[in-house]
Length: 124
Image 1 (cartoon, helix red, strand yellow):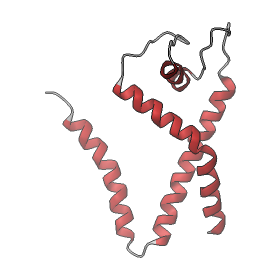
Image 2 (cartoon, helix red, strand yellow; image 1 turned 60 degrees about the vertical axis):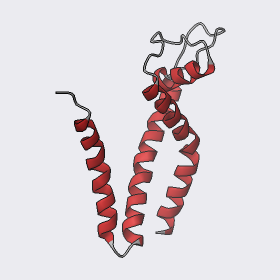
Image 3 (cartoon, rainbow, N blue to C red; image 1 turned 30 degrees about the vertical axis):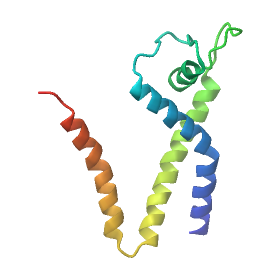
Image 4 (cartoon, one colour; image 1 turned 135 degrees about the vertical axis):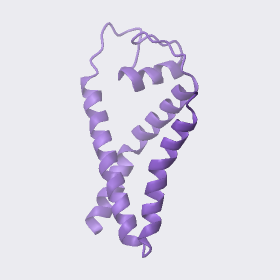
């Protein structure tokens, strides 16, 4: 149990800055879907950060080409670590609480709520 908590802590802390970056730039893109679509064409810092999120490149006038392979490996590792960390967190929640139904109820609401909101957003 101690090892799981430690793994949960260190994975969360290591990937927290990158996760916050992806959440923030994804949030911006959700509210501003009219971004420039050309690869690496960004005029301001927000556009450059969005380009990192979407294209895995940091556009710079001095660069004549980009190789996003290493950054993509990091993002895949972050995604795997996030899934593992979330699963560890759910496991720890189930172990820590006597009333396990509250954890299951929260998980069920976490599945049903987005589906319901997407369904309510459909125009017929």
